[in-house]
Image (cartoon, rainbow, N blue to C red):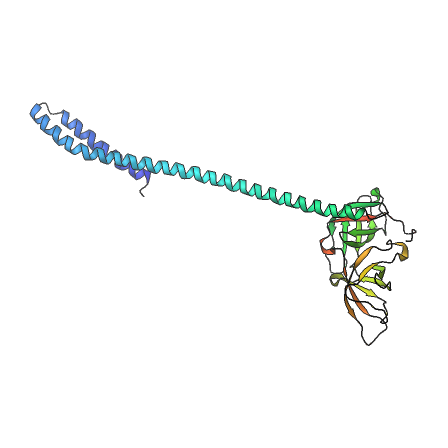
Amino acid sequence: MASPRKYYTITAIVVFVVVSLIVFSLNFKSPERMSFFRKIVLEAVDPLECAVDSVFSSVGGAWKRYVMLVGLERKNKELEAKIVSLVRDVGDYREMSLECARLREIMNMKKGFEFTTVAARVVGRNRSSVFKTVLINKGTADGIKTGFPVMGTGGVAGRIMETSRNVSKVLLLVDYNSNIDVLVQRNRCQGVLRGCGSSGCELRYVQKSEDVKTGDVVVSSGLAGVFPRGLLIGKVAVVKKGEVGLFQKIMVHPAADIARLEEVLVILREKEDNG
């Protein structure tokens, strides 16, 4: 399609020719000659007028299409911006819905404790391969002290390692420095649960004579005065009885999703209160 500028040039030339012919015809004073020449002019002007009308129609149509395309482009941009905004709102609402569901689980778990508890949000995470800790947004101002048990959705997550007025550090039960006195719920055999990092936890010091099976539930024993008796720790995932040594090799999968902790429940319980 020719550009509007080219149409304007052609139109100007045609108009100039038509005007020239009309002016030239007016210079004839003889009626006979003037009549004859007017016929010639009329014959010449008619197709030129058609051409002029066609040019103007083409230019007008091209301009209308251009204006329409500009309007559509602007409208498309507005619609795209609105779609982005709506997608962002949907994401926010979905995130709030998931958070409410997690908080509902935490609050339901809170009802099962006879101790006072404090709900907290995870605000930091140590991602090193050595230490497995998280930071929560509650501290001594909320009654939290070192050693207090921390529950995640589903079961024990760890215990308070350090605390300040508004922030506390939680030592997760999968950390290599974590040791919890536990027992197998089915047969009441006791052992010590030690963190093994990404592998989960190992139930240590269980003699080979003890009947421990995959799927057995492991709970806190209440010894050492840190965790109340009967808190869910996890389930036995692997049991191996080697020929060497006195103890079985037992791996336990934590009940709490340690890698995805977002909200926790801190049990306000003094160490002296053995359960």
